[in-house]
Length: 105
Image (cartoon, rainbow, N blue to C red; front, side):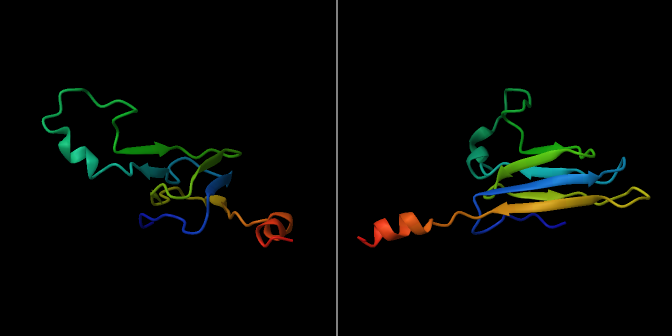
């Protein structure tokens, strides 16, 4: 799948119902790629804090939550079975109570 973000959401997620081996990981990419151009020459070894990508292996029952602005993609399903995922996005909307207070009522 193509690298993307979820606009107009604050929290996104993927719940893996079925996840056979080799069904493709969800891969997150750092939003600091442009900033990392100043890492040359690189003296430190790659750590979880300096990685440009981080992949999560799917497994049945696993829930992966992440901020919607974080770029990500899914690897190709190379298993001989279906990967079943329930995706979600949380959208913040003002409550009617907050809306009334904003309008001065």
